[in-house]
Length: 328
Ligand code: NAD
Image (cartoon, rainbow, N blue to C red; front, side, top):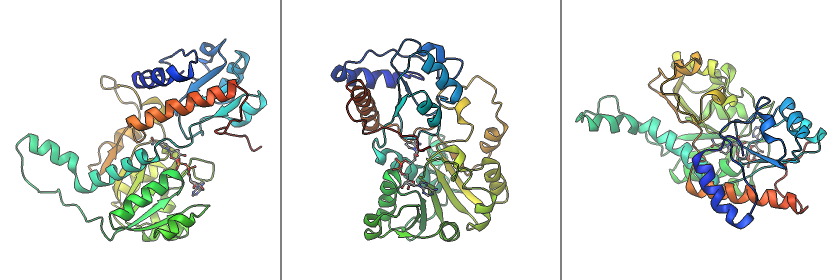
């Protein structure tokens, strides 16, 4: 297991009491330089920022790897064609507590809107002033949801609960959500009508930089954009421009395009080299969390159980219900 943190070890060790695989944990992330660490194992278990490009896959294949077990839902970091060429199976955890991510998106909205992060600090310094803490009611606002799969659907239901009008865009429309009050619209209409836009689609060549200067141009002035999907759904440079022009009123992101070299580690004593990230940190209306939307006990338990079951299914030649297939 690459990129293994203390919480991975804790939850996987517990779940492995049932599945009884031989687990070896590495702090290092998997990339073409560390691929040799996988030599002699049957499978690798990886997370969102491990780099399984063609070169890495070729090296782990040479080392005997037969299965890549992603302990996450997204698989944009895996070259599926290369895995296919080397007859390596790819399995993932398609849904682990979608509520965890949906609830975090709601937390970003509430924090940005009601400025609870600022209020917390003020009150601790005996500053009880309400100056500049004005928020807005969510009730009655229009929320645009892009991607209404498992997480997007959970998020729609939360926002319906707040009394918001929920509009959505997806290449597949959900009848169940329509019945619950979600209205599907075209992407342009969603940009035009939404007070808040939340991204829950996967990162694909079609969705890369879905939110760019053209999209911002169509949005309402002061719009709030929330991204718990993948960083590259947003063109961050364009977002910074839109923030400077005060077109983008609030930006809440749990994912960042260049997060690979930043997130999941303590860099508090290191000089930040990423100028774009550093600029983002200067805006009072930007809130960044470091890819923690999934991070609940319930989700970690499910991730460990499903990942280890995926490995057992592979070992036993059982059907791989969570296989990511190459459609080449
Ligand atoms: P899902 O597959 O259930 O749903 C994705 C939805 O997006 C589907 O309904 C699909 O039809 C839709 N979609 C695909 N292409 C689209 C397009 N071009 N335009 C609009 N919609 C499109 O996936 P999910 O479990 O809901 O997860 C969504 C994404 O959230 C994942 O791909 C992953 O990148 C991200 N995620 C982030 C975290 C986190 O901790 N921040 C955790 C889990 C997942």
